[in-house]
Image (cartoon, rainbow over all chains, first blue to last red; front, side, top):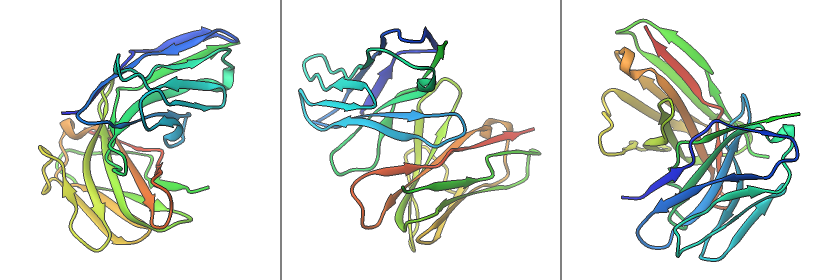
Length: 112
Length: 116
């Protein structure tokens, strides 16, 4: 079945550091890929998505590129801020299907 | 924007009792809601799909008599953990899809259940 393998955390970085959170997947067909973020005390929010190979999703300075050849969707940000501290989830889902398969989540802490 | 509220956000109960968790879409209608469960350091696992006015669809391996789901209205779905045991302790999250909206899910903040 479908699965998502996500970089284990926690990850602690200094403000303005470069961020990479790795995500790889296995799936049949051509799924859509997502990154969700969960801030303390809040629900998961969609951060960005990509629906086909070579698509790049971006939002709030975060980017991820759908790499079919490496089955990856790594999350990157060039300069993180304290406000980026949260738990990040990589997920996949068939297009038009809300049933998502999630990774384990990566807790990110940014220190000033 | 769309908001999904879960209540309670955390609950502690004794073994053998039943616990109800509510999931409400506050400013939109949702024909479909989803219930997930997350163990520490593990993925969110989809438990069931809750459909308004009909029976829930459970994922393989999820006991439907243990985890009762009711979706009585377009804004409310409930998950009842019956005869709870310590192994049911977990983080339960719901999500909802707006009736008329794009294929975007809105998630609740989750409910942490601890069974003593």
